[in-house]
Image (cartoon, rainbow, N blue to C red; front, side, top):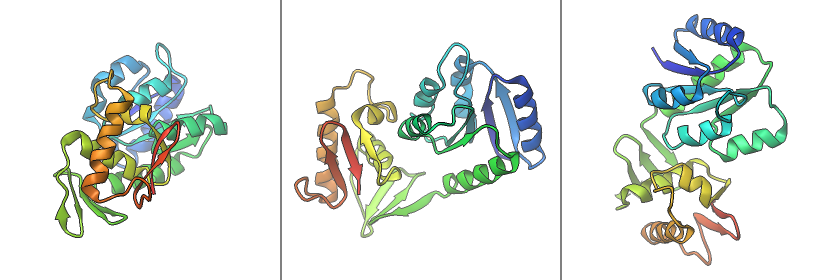
Length: 215
């Protein structure tokens, strides 16, 4: 039984969503307190997050959760394109604008959990074992450090998106005071280990003034 945390301050919606999901075999806990949610979210397989919360903005909650690998579905009345772009840029895995059919939420949860529970994935020329935190190319393991693995995995799972240095900082275990030049050094080391040429990249492209994109 998959455990889901619903962070939602609308008590009526809390009840409606949690009861509906329980009918499909999910174990659901809910809270309207984002600060308390950040203390317990690692105990869950998936998070459903409202953006309009007391005490803390939903995007700030998202930043903290996405330092982990736990999938997040944003469930919000803020359904305009600007909020959707911000949500995806900060690492949201899906975005549902209220109101929506609960059945659609179930389908999206199942899709995310299926992807998350696949231990070994293949993206581009790389095979990634998420459990072992190991990356191979042409069956040869790449000797990444822990932080190099985290940065590489974050870039590759967001393939095709421009990722800022700030996003990398918030989505990995880098110290919050890490400077941009340190992130650039890690990227340089990653490129060297995967045989990528910065001036003619096959995998990681520098985006001037912003950050990087995995091609």
